[in-house]
Length: 201
Image 1 (spheres, rainbow, N blue to C red):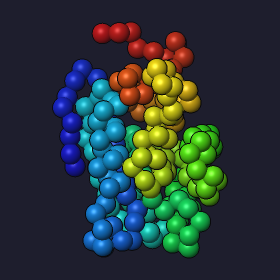
Image 2: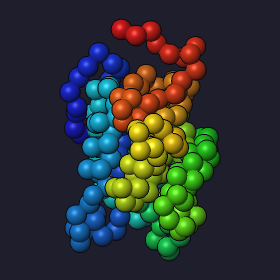
Image 3: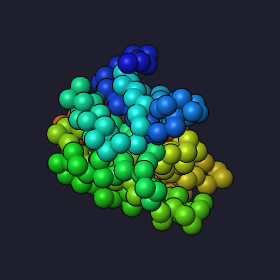
């Protein structure tokens, strides 16, 4: 477990899971966990305790890891890898197997963002679900695509062109009873209805 520096915001525990047969067996270096931790550290003002896991493409192992992280108090669990159509790609099935509610809008928006860059984005099968008071989201496998889907697309002047999925994550976590996530607007501006916003401190 790793922690970021503290602030006046609510502390949050986040599970980050990289799913890859080859990376987990040491064939090549995993780049998913560093990419997730780097982006979240830049995007969030909250003090974050990370729970990293590097595991193979095995459905039962993935489901067990997700349950373990939810039980450990992770308000958010992000996975990377295993969401394509290849025979060993089983992350979506393993995620749906532990779901209490499915959140299809996250996957729809991720594919919409990725289609801006590559036509093969339609082969991606990422899903998002709620289990108890935790939000679990499957992300793409490549670090560049992870940042694009979380952050969205910006115009040349820095204004938002297409919203990334993370803009909706803090309010979703509010609704399921989790901590109040605060974002750094220059990375990703969270959206909440005015009635759900905390007064500035």
